[in-house]
Length: 272
Image (cartoon, rainbow, N blue to C red; front, side, top):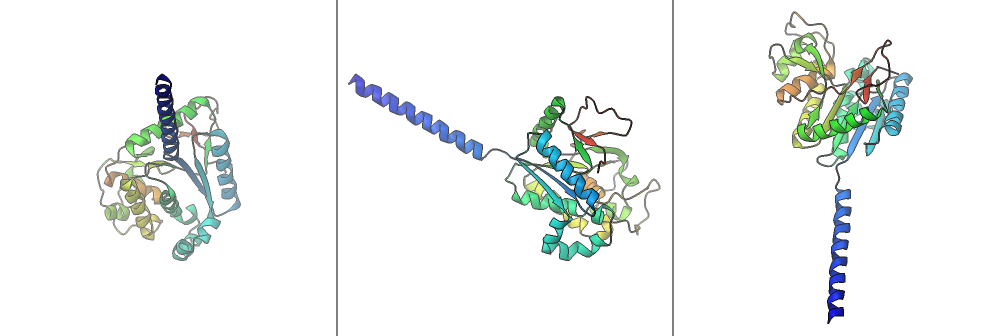
């Protein structure tokens, strides 16, 4: 009788072990993935830049599950996109179509992602460090994005200085003294709200007058200097969606900057 009881105990223990194993396997399968994308198009120097940053993301950072790079060749293979926007892009070399491709590529990548996955968009002109503290900071960004849905960096400059009035009027955000947010690096957690945000960013960008350098019909603010294209639309939408999650995601570097002991994993160097 005692032997039979022992067998029952062993059998139950085995069931518990197996159940724990399969639960762990399920958790691994359902774990949140972290994606990174970048783009370079319109010339060999931009292709070189996206190849460089892709290599840096692959070799210097170990938090990404999926790392994707895109070029103009990928856009041209996307028949629907290229038939709609190819002429505009080819005729407007700045930003390879004023960065119209940025919200589009973010949108298409998010379609591949699972709910709650994290996406990093990183301009190909940035650089990635491999400093241990910087890598830990990157993990902190992911944790903050899980809490806040989106992270971006503030430019510290007034919105109306870098946004033509027609775009401000179209989106319907005309608050005084608001600061423009940058779209150089954007970290997004996929959920319904953020899908709608990115889709609207792309939809508005398809109205070329709102993204390009054509003069505003409405009078610009007296402080106006230049329209910032995709970033102008992005920044206004962060206000429309009541987002206030500015974070220092990058460190700007110049020729005089010492590359030692950076506090951030991503450097804004505009390196080709």
